[in-house]
View (cartoon, helix red, strand yellow):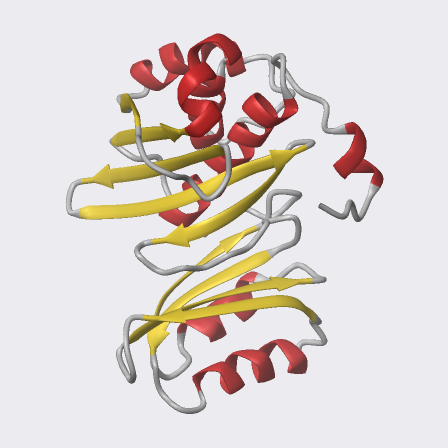
Length: 226
């Protein structure tokens, strides 16, 4: 793996013994919370590979729940996250999965509140860095190292052009984009990582674009998830 910055090498400030098993897990939890848009009533976590073997001893279970509570990796409340989640009414379950995973440190997060649900699979790839590989059944890859816009939309001509035009008109550069679809002219999803923050006004415009059904905005370094 090629490291792009010093953070990738030395890792983040954190509570816990391992940047991969704790700091990365916090980050995955924070991304899942951003995708869901609110505190879930129930969180079901499935650990794979090395995570499955060591999550209890390394505090990965505490870390991912801390992320779902929107704590950062250096928050002193991380070790108490399960108790805090219980007090807030969040039911939590942990399972281990079998079979080959896309990375040794992989977990799946399933969130539920009433009829609302979301699912995300991601990996902790070292130094507190992560890669999301699946969102709500779509094969979407992104790192959340930058402000990230996730759009769920119809697979129709011009949708991607309207998204990129909207960002371009706001002088926001796209650093990375990934797209997946269920089938030709069916449902699709797009992940867009940008070099600049996306304002509330711009998010509102994006929601009004033709064929856009829903969107989420994740900025782990500043903005509030939507």
